[in-house]
Amino acid sequence: MNQKKSSLLTRREFLRCSALLAGAAFLSTLRSVVPAPIQKRTQDSPTVIFIVADALRADHVSAYGYSTPTTPNLDKWVAAHGARFTQATSPAPWTYPASAAMMTGRSPTQLTANWETRTLPMDVTTLAEYLHFSGYYTAGFASTSFLGGEYGFARGFDIYDDWVAHNHKTSTSGGAAVINDHVFTWFKNTWNGLTQPLFLFLYYSDPHSWYYPPTPYDTLYDPNYIGELTPESYGNGQAAMAGTKVPVVRDLQHLLSLYDGEITFWDYHIGQMFTFLQQQGLLEHALIVVTSDHGELFGENGMWVHGNCLYEEVLRIPLLLRYSGVVPAGSVVDTPAQNMDIMPTILDFLDITYSPEIQGVSLAPVLEEQISPTISSSRSTYSELDKVTDPQHWAYAIAPRTDLRCIQRDGWKLIHHVDHPEDDELYFLNSESVYETENLIHENPALAQELRQLLWDWFQLPSTASSPYTTERVLPEAKLGQFQALQRSPNPRPSPETGNFWRGWFSGRPHTKLRAKGGSSVPR
Ligand SMILES: [Zn+2]
Image (cartoon, rainbow, N blue to C red):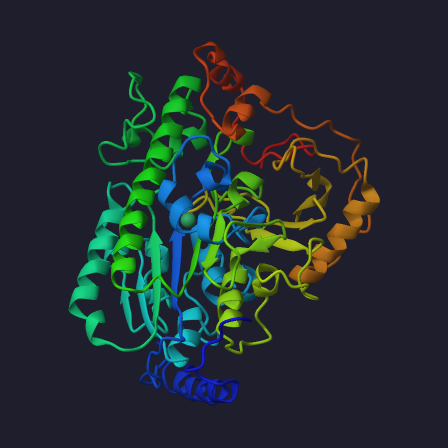
């Protein structure tokens, strides 16, 4: 690597600190006890800036080809100077397991991060802990309650400000502005007196529902709308999920304009943040990562928001990395990546040794245009989502009724229904269609079984059946071609003639959000 830190911990020193951490953890069952920073900041230590935007679909980011200019600042400050991953996915389609994976480099399964748990395991070292023990001053600002400090996400941070997470709900406009205000105030009051290298973690929730952008972003992309859909009426998509109030095409167009407005509002504020950090002299030698925890659904497959399936709409995320002088500007990387690779990538760039139990892989060799034996274009990636079957459970209206696991490899994607393998789905994803279009599992049973075995091994699931197909073939459920073309178009703006087919499609039908394509016709 061209630029290695010289002032941070050596691997031997790190292991010694890890032993201290283990001892401290033994003494405290509540939090890790973090020793005082032991290294001073030098000019060789890059600033590390890690930015997450909640529920940001890759295909709504202009750097990813979206024709609506939603993210000019992200494009200018990060994409133009660094690398863009075209095949980045999340290991889970909702905030807690995805964020837990990002901050630890481990899969949700390894963390037992699911609907039942909210707290990071104590025996897992977080990214902030690694950096803190390596001499960084670690500052985190979080805006979602899933990343509250009480759930272990504050571990390793010298300052962890989750005020916004607990006081500024996602149903309220303007979260990015409040996060920035807190960051700027902290800089003024605290940072200027410190001499360590900085790790700055910023978690913004603006793209997450409600889609409630402040003026003028609420009308920026659909100024002439006179319909009934409002941020309040859509809320978190409850009525749409239940099938009781599904947006018609014109309303959907407006819904997307509100979502895009939130993205552009967030983008404006990260532009403000980058300008500020540059004025502080912190961008010249900075490692910057921007990503999302998961995507978002707008009616594809009859589904809304997220947390309900493993389709690409909720798994595909933007992943951009800028490290000037190390990563070539304007790089486009087609190697499959996941957001749990971010932690080992950062640590690798900083030459910090990390646990071999970390399941994410460093993307640094790929970014430096080297051949990596551990990551290649044929790498398998995995995602997961647990079921909820108790009607009293808080996530019952969102979650599926069977555990879902998926594997992607060489363009193929198998979605495994753990309790109902007869409903398994197989898709081929390519540049023509990065989303699921036709379930090909009955045409490719051998490939499906090969992928299923890899998936069983990864998730350590019992091999329940050698051939799960005991029923006759059921043709894939007809998909909403015109409607989905609207969602997946680089410019999803329906013409007025597209009409009201969505409401008609839904009328008289049960809610089908849990229905397996190509499998059982019985909703679960
Ligand atoms: Zn989220």
